[in-house]
Image (tube, rainbow, N blue to C red):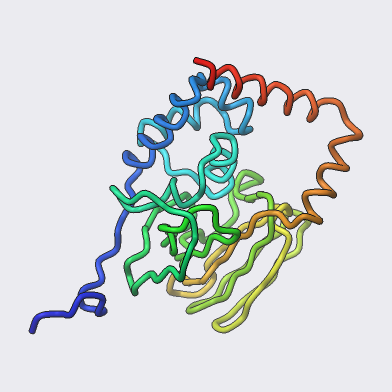
Length: 237
């Protein structure tokens, strides 16, 4: 029996392998004319991590690819769109059929990115399979601008926060929080837990608050000035 297009029998995941992602990362960096050291300084991601990611030798966690995306002015959808698909501005409803998201295996998650054909979205929805079974250390905690929502589809998870709080979520439970707080997901059920997760960009209130925090210190202002100088120099080449 032949499956109809868009039916569950026709659903094949689009997997974004490390090599393809690495090439996109390197191309974006080269377009700015930046060295690994310059990108590392602007993003806060170490030179070895960027180098290994560009060569397809390392899967990045959410915090690192979000930081690199911001530094390179890359929309999350451009980073994780299907091969040959160029995201366009959201001008109508975007449908992602069952199993047709773009899958990327990170350090502790397998992400299936949804709605990747729409550029500039305020939210980035994913279906995530939580592979982590324990917290190894401070490096396991992700932090990124905006807010985050998680809804458990199956299994159970513990969400650890870097202040020591732990929230257990079972099927049907959900959690909403400020994603600037260090957080990490761990599967605690026999089977790996699956969740729907949504991250957002910063609200205008959060942007204003962050701008206020930065105005009282000189270092961030200097970093912003340096970033602007580097970008200007890159565009003039």
